[in-house]
Each structure stands twice: as C-alpha cells, then as structure tokens.
Length: 544
Image (cartoon, rainbow, N blue to C red):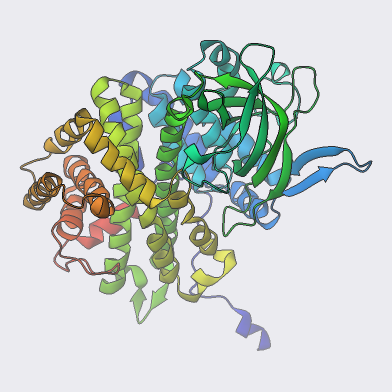
C-alpha cells in the first residue's frame, strides 16, 4: 500500500522527440511565403532536419548541461604563462557545432539564405540561446568586412563555412572560423564615440597597435573580433585576430567573464588590449559607418532570438495545458486558460511573422527593402524584445508551481528573456534610431508606409491604427520624449498589417481587436471572449 503514494498521475509527458520547425505553423508558412520555389524543397528539408535535432532529447540535454556547467576562464597555464583561454562543457561545443553545420553563419552565400538562416536561428534558439551569440556575431561580421574586399576575400569563406573548428590557431589553417565583437567601454556604454581605446599606426600599411579596455567583448574564444578604437583620424573599425600568422597569440588579455542573469552558457568578457595587433577595416574615422551593418544584422538576430524564446515558452505552456486536468477537464478547454494561451500565441506569431519578413528584405536587397529595414529593424528590435519577458513569465505561470522549477525549463527561458532587449542597444537606443531614420531618411518612412499600405481596407482597426500613426508622425513637438511610444506603434502596425495579409482570419482578428483596437487589458488573458480563441490556441499547439 505504501508504494501507491508514488504513483504519478496528471503530469504531462516531456515535450521532446518532435520536429520544432515543422509543427510551428507561423514559421513554416513564412518560409513558404518568402523562399524562392526553386530552393524551397531544399530549405524545407534542411529546416526539418534541424527541427528534429532541436526537438530531440539529446539536444535538450545538451542545452541543460551547457547552462549547468558554464564557461570557465583560465588566464594562465600550469607554468605561469598567460594563455587567456575559456573552457566550455562539451555540450556547448556540440550545440555550437550543430549550429555552424546547419548554416547559421552562412546566410550571405546561398539563395534565400537570410530567410533560411533566420528560420534555423529561431528554431535552434529554442534548444539553448547562449550559443546564438557567436553564431550571430560571425554571421553579422560579413557585411562589415566587405568594406575591405581583400579582408572579405580572406575571411568570408571561413565565416560562412559549415565546419566548426574550436582550436586556437592561425585562421589560414582553419576551414571554419568564428567572430566576436568589442565596442562597449565602461566610460561610454552605448555612446561608442566616447571610446578611449587608442590605435597607433604601425609600419605596415593598414596595421595598428591597440591599447585599451573593452567592458563587453562577445564570444572571447573566437578567431577574430571587430572592435572600435580611436585612430589619428577618429573612431575606426579594426579586425583583431586571436592568433597571429606566425602562430603566436595576439595580446588579448581576458580580465574576467561576466556573471550574468541568464545566457550563462555563453562567455561574455572584459578584455584588455596592450599593443594588440590589428588590421584596419574601412577608412579611418569611419568606424561607426563600417560596423553599422554588423550592428543591424545582430539587431535582427535579437528579434529572431526573442521570437524563438517566445515560441518555446508558448509551446511548453500549450503542451502542458493539453495534458493537465483540473476542475473536471483539461486546462486547455477552460475558457480563461484558453484566453491566456491565445493571447500568448498571438504575441509569438506576430513576432515570428515580422522577423521573417525582415529577413526576406535582406534577401531581396533592393533599395526599397533596404529603406524598410532602416526603420523596421530598430522598431522591431525595440518592441519584440520587450514583449519576450512578459510572455515567458506568463507561460511559466501556465504551468503553475511546476513552471517555477528548474527542471521544467521555463526558468531558463525567463532568465534569458530580457537579454535581447539590452544587447546591441537597449530600448532608448532603438527608439532614438527610429527617430533618426524618420528625420534623416524620408525614403525609410515611405517604404514603411507602402508596406503597411498593402493591408489597408482589410480591417477597420488596422486602418484606424495607420491613421493614428500618421497623426502621431505629423506632430513633431516633443518627439524625442515620445520616441518609445512611436517605435511601439510602428512595430504594432507593421505586425498587424502582416497578420492581416498572411495569418488565418482568427489570428488577425484577435490581434487587431486587442493590439490595435484597444479591446484588451493590461495583462495577458484579457482578449474579447467573442473571438475564436480555440482556433488560435490549436494553431500554436506543438504536436509531439
């Protein structure tokens, strides 16, 4: 009889052994929409394979291990020699290697590459978000390096390679390489023009010696880094290799690894340069202009990463409520819980749809699409990354006390959720960047209005939101103090326009009624009860 107290009932099975990509209808439909039919079958196949890997028990275990055993800094070897190396758990290398092999750094070299990579990045983030940092930095370094054709010819094949080579050795001996980035300094933060790292020209043309301190340096185990420093003609972009051509280590003194709220599997560091050898990228004094395309690409990855976290949180919540029973029936069938789940699903689908549309603009590459990206990327980065935290917290609450326990996986998502809002420029930086685009680049607003204009007349609440946005834009009084409000509205209207065009009617109707029409409360689960919420939830359900 005593053993009967240990019978486990009313607990959902683990959400594992499924294809993370193929069960995500918002994501698969976006890929179908944006990828050229000539390469669509190939894209479907590779993404489904990555989705199965992401949903496997093995990959999920690697994600847990990479966070339970975070990286460790070794400044010296046993003999007292300075080595500045970062040790990672084997699970980290397996995850990162899988991401590289899946082409998550190779968007620039294949047809439809940005949409295919964006979908893969969103899928792989759901396994473990920390390894997304080096994948993102490596991917985003390519457009910056293209300011110097010689450097691009040398480095781009390594950065876009599908081979993960973790050894620290000269890059010319490697079939694949990773990049990090160092812009932020303790005295400047987001104000990179206040950087004090000095760059002194050396005898060889285009080479410099750097001296200074970087308060945040991403992925310090990488093969190369793009950094900003003050050259004689002003702030300039430089490539700092980790290992020099002769096999010796460059001066790259890792002072410490940051002890972070989340993202614990990933090494974020402070580094010191002391006569560090560097190669100039772009012209002297043009550092911000040189590196800005890298920043834009990483900002889009922040949107994708947040969309991935939201999708996984919603999938876990819907899965739990599908199997959990309370008060005489499934939680999924309870009207109030259904309202909460539908509300969360709307946020997730809107984020995914917007992120993939922006990736498609990169693939197009035309003037109109580039103008759209100039305003839509910072607006999306501002809004989507800020929605991530309330979504993950509410999703954890759907599991009740189980969601507060580490084994559920939700606490890791919650800890990770604020990060993308902070990285690559926090909320105010994004909102002010939106203002700069509006004030300096009228073609950006024109491209945005043409994009949302495609959906005009399809929903009266969207039409009203567009009209309200135009009124807001016409009033420039105190516009800097309203920058966050404006960025939010730009993102919401764009999300609404995309959903009206592409999502099922029940999804678009619920989004427009709540986010644009104002029939919504201050917390999730306050959607109008007259909507078809059951269909919204069913669309978001992961089938295991």
